Image 1 (cartoon, one colour):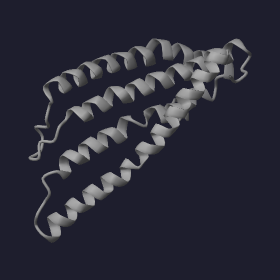
Image 2 (cartoon, one colour; image 1 turned 45 degrees about the horizontal axis):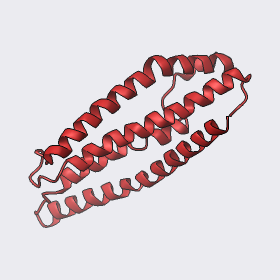
Image 3 (cartoon, rainbow, N blue to C red; image 1 turned 180 degrees about the vertical axis):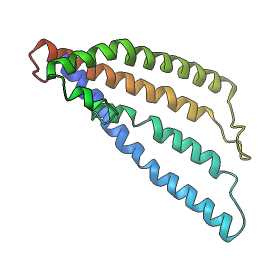
Length: 172
């Protein structure tokens, strides 16, 4: 039990801080877009780099905080059904859905994104979308890192649910 508590504590610490740190990228994205709009409409000189930076920051903002959201139970759930369930039934549903859907899907995405990041790093992939052509492999590496955090947080949440099921709803 001590190991499980330590694991959950460490994973939730990482999820909390990764979510908080990545949230500041929202400011970077607003700043980047503001600079581009200002230069485009005031000086008629659009930037060559803002599109690439914006989609990389936007992609990072989309998936990096998912472990944080999972930890805080901020994801979409079907409340109309869960309100009718007893706490025990809701735990059982969560455990079954984790095993059937969450873990298989997240592990497949983690594997596929890690494979893509590895091959991107090997060839030192560059963006073909904009004119600037920045390196794309750092962004590709961030994707499996984000999904690894999601899987680790999913294991922690799953362990909490299983513990609660076995101990009459008592929290770990």
